[in-house]
Each structure stands twice: as structure tokens, then as C-alpha cells.
Amino acid sequence: MDAPGTDTRREALPSLTGLRFWAALLVVFYHLSREYHRMPLLSPLVWFGRDGVTFFFVLSGFVLAWSHPGAGVPARVFYWRRFARIWPLHLLTTGLGLVVTLLLGAAVPVTAALWSLPLLQSWSPAEVYGGNPAAWSLSAEAWFYLLTPALLPFLGRRGDRALALLAAGACAAGAGWWLCGAFTGSPAEREWLLDYLPAARTPQFLLGAVAAVAVRRGLRPPVPLGAAVGAVLLWHLALLPWSAAAPDSRWYSPYSGSQALAAPLFALLVVTAAVRDTDGPGGRHGSGRHRGGSRGMLGSGPMRRLGHWSFAWYLVHQSCLRLVLLLCGPPRGPAATAAGWLLVSGGSLGLAAALYQWVERPLERRLRALGPQPPRGPEPGPVLPRARLGGIVTTGRRQPLPSRSTAE
Image (cartoon, rainbow, N blue to C red; front, side, top):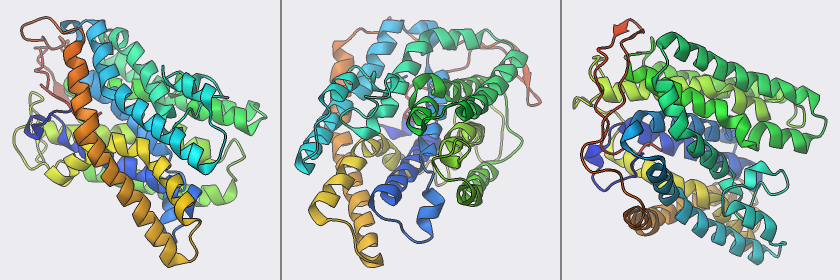
């Protein structure tokens, strides 16, 4: 997958870039509610906002399957590009997290930080948080990247019925793995097995990848984007009575269930947003190119910019939160709580914007230029067999690949 570029007009799926911001915001507000102080009305809605990471895993599978050129780029080039995309900022924010840990007077997790450098921390329950607690998800992403060069050609050779079975299997695997929590007595071990272990998150990535292949073949969901957004909102509202009935320590609580069970809703959201970008707001079924229709709020310039910053924002927000607690202490009263929320979220977002502009993008470009390069000439798109999906018959011609994708 190509990395973010300077010319946002070339983005193939701008609405997915905008969705990245909202998913990151959900995670930021989740941590502010649980680690800083609750906000009336808002905190109950985001109390299980860790499922924003589930959205990112589904989105990652979709975008990689959408933009990966298959045989046009060797695996070593793909791996180097992904390294250039995530590792420099991971290294910097891990260092920031360790500095904040020192300022807090806490023990520095040296071993965990060493595990996190090669992005292996989530494979060990003792080292999962590394030097930067937010970076655990990058360990799962690295696992997904390892699978991608073999997984995507496999999906491209499957027929529409096989894709449907794979999607159903991915949904069932997520729910089934969550049900296995009933057999794990230790809450800490259960949390690692259900929430952090990369293998447990693989069905979410697979679901996103299968959805992208299906959309390229002509699948169009029977619901519009607004309905998909409404379904996600209703899901979070449904978590309120569920959480009142089952505390986080129980395996059947929404603490882990929300992350394992929300993947189908997030996949529907990603698909409907992608279809809007490719077909336009009128629902025109086309070749997969954006036709210049209205991008809506999600694909607007400000939302794309916020989406670009979301990766850095996700990686720095917890360090900023801990630093504010160190400098200002716990808030006292609603006004202080609101001010603290604004300070943490706004300050960390501003830092993320600076990191994106002066660290993330330039270092990625330099590393990409230093590493292995793809063969010269146009990169062919994947050959998609003729299929009937969602009432749309595809032509089987090579679909043109987006020149640059910034949704993940």
C-alpha cells in the first residue's frame, strides 16, 4: 500500500481517511473517561471505545486488499514500505512514553520496550504494553502485514461463494473466540487472549480484506452510509444496559465482547463509505474510480487532514494524558474535567499534526527511497473473475488501482 502523499486530490477513498479520525477520537475519549475523569453523558457512550481499534483492524484489511497491487510489487518491497510507514513514528513515540514514565517516577519497562521495537510485544502477556501503551496494536498490524503478500493472492483466486463463506467464518471466529473466555479463569489472561493476542484479531483483518475484494467485484451493500453509521451508534447505545448488567471483570461483559462482536458493523461502515467514494452519492455502480461526486463530510478536506493526523494522535495521546495528570493532578469538578479533556485531546492532536508534517511523512519518504523499489513500468491490478455479487455482474477486467491510498 502506498503511503500518504501531499496531493490529497489523488486519494482513492477519502471517506475512509475521514473515518480514521472518528475511530481515533473514540479511543482517545475512552482513555480520557477511564484514566482521567468521566464526563457526564459523553463518557457512558465511549466507555467501551476500545472497539475503535477493532475498526482500525477491519479498515487495515480493507485498504491493503484494495490498494495492494499483487504480483506487481515483490513482498520485500511491501514489507519495507510498511516498515517505513509505521516504525519511525513508533520508535519516537515509544521514546516519548518512556520519558513520561521516568517523569512519573514509575519503573521503566525496559524489557517490554525491547519487545516493542520489533513489534512483538502483543505476543507476550507480560510485555504487551511496551514503552508506549497505545502501540500494542502495531504488533497485531505487523502480523497482518506478514500475512498480506500470501493472503491477498489467495483471496483474489476465490469465487464469490468462497468469499461469502470466508466473511461468515471471520465473523463466527470472532464471536467464538470471545465465547472461549468462559473457560479462562484469570481476568488478566483472558484480557490478553481476547483483546491483545494478534491471532485473536486476525479475523477482523480478514473480514476487511474479504470485503475489499468483494467491493472490487461489484458488491454493493443494501444499506446507505447513513444507515451504517446509525447501526454503529445504536451498537454503542446498546452497550449501556449491557455494561450495567455485567461488570468488566466477567467474561461476558461488553469490555471484551464489544471488540470481538463489532467487526461486522465496522465492515459494513467501511464498505458503504468506500462505495460512496467509488460510485458517488447517487449510488452509481462504476469501475471503482471516484467520479467526482460530492464526497460529503467524511471526505472533505478538513476531515482528510484530521484523518492523516490520526495515526500519530493515537500513538501520543496516552503519553499526553499521563503528562497532564503529572503536571495538573486529577481534576476537581466538572469545569476542570472539561478543561482537562480539551487540553489532552487538543494538545495531543496538535502534537500529532506536527509529527505528521515534520516526522512521519518525511521519514517515510526517505526510508522508502532508500529501500528496495518495485519493478519499473505500470503495476497491474489484480485480475478479478467474473462474478455476480449483490446483483451486480462484474466484467472480469483488471480494475485500475488507486495511485495512492491514505485510509490506513
